Image 1 (tube, rainbow, N blue to C red):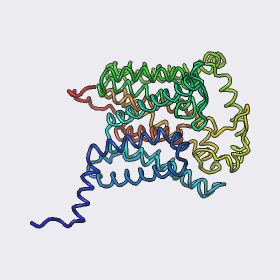
Image 2 (image 1 turned 90 degrees about the horizontal axis):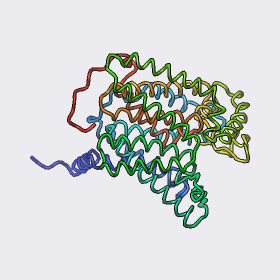
Image 3 (image 1 turned 60 degrees about the horizontal axis):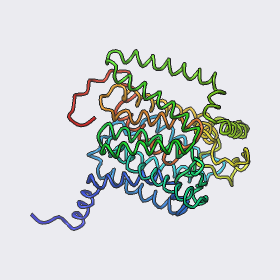
Image 4 (image 1 turned 135 degrees about the horizontal axis):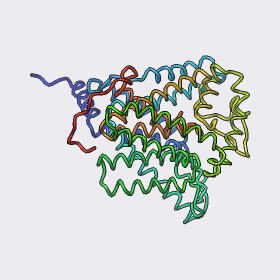
Length: 437
């Protein structure tokens, strides 16, 4: 039998290389690192460099998915709710007040969507957790090193990445993320990730424990009221999920309703005691700033209420209506200080309704899976979504870059494992496995 043609041999070699576990692991790490470091990359190499990296990763990920399509579980490839939301965002280019900027914003969103899809489809949840863990360990360590150098050793700011150098006075710190609130959100996701790694024995015990301590230290010195408030909600959610997982299978449905009622009650109490909570978290300045931003936005919400102004993602201050918003308390906002208000402004009431449906379905699916499945790995998407959706009330990180990539991963994984038609149907008991849980 004659050898295959040289071109076929090359294609076969490429296929084997792209389908290899080592390549998939390296690509996953690069994708998560690029998303987590997008602010740093933008500041250090500019938009041209960041877009070049993203474009290359999108092409590589798309080729990898195509070549490895037979080995991928395509069931539940995309939640219908995610498709509907993306379709509405893309269609906003037709009525956008700034079509050229909307085209760029849509391309930016789609790039992170494709990368999130690659992670969700090509990697198991435990592999995704490991990729996030490895990247976030380095990111948080780099943040602390930068703050020690400029806050303690040099005692100066580092304006290129917005580091204020306040570590000597106990914070707040921004690390390599440019914002204490973004740093706090990433540290919370890292806390969940490191705890999951420790529970599944994916890393050495010493590494897991020191990683948890590092994430906790970052949360404290970031001094982010948004992160502090989210941490309280995360602890409550984790405790509720722990109770559900320990309950008898036949009692879980009733307990789910109890948890729902308790959550509604706690939300009502939090609203009634909002003044005291704001004081407790030293968040009065943050709340005043956000209320000021929202007041500035309200007139523009009324101009295009249904369809919005057109998708942008990150604000561009040189186009309408964004140059007319603010400043508030001497600061010029670069977002609506809420993911939900931001979508309302850019994609209208229709876009907001689609987003709420998307996040609601993703969270319910993830929560049900986490409560029913035996492996602790299913708790990771549910708890990560708790962080993303809660922080989304006060920041717009959910809509772009690391926040959006992480959300897409969690939503698609939940959709693969539990469609809406099976959401209320009891799952068969999973067999015991000798694999670490």
